[in-house]
Image (cartoon, rainbow, N blue to C red; front, side, top):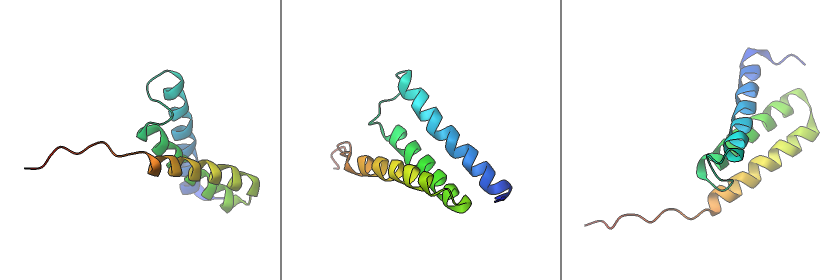
Length: 87
């Protein structure tokens, strides 16, 4: 199925987000529990799950959808940093 330039661009961007987050983690630039790492996985996984649904690749919908949901769950469970006391 031909998806057009928008989906092609989004899928490449999503791939780069996921790989970039992985490489940053491997090089010690972020941890697997950092907000930036998790957010990159939520966005990248969500976009690739959507793209996979458009092209009918259901096993990748499940894989990327799981990755997106697991990262979102971890992101939402992460405690927020303490706020400065307001006067």
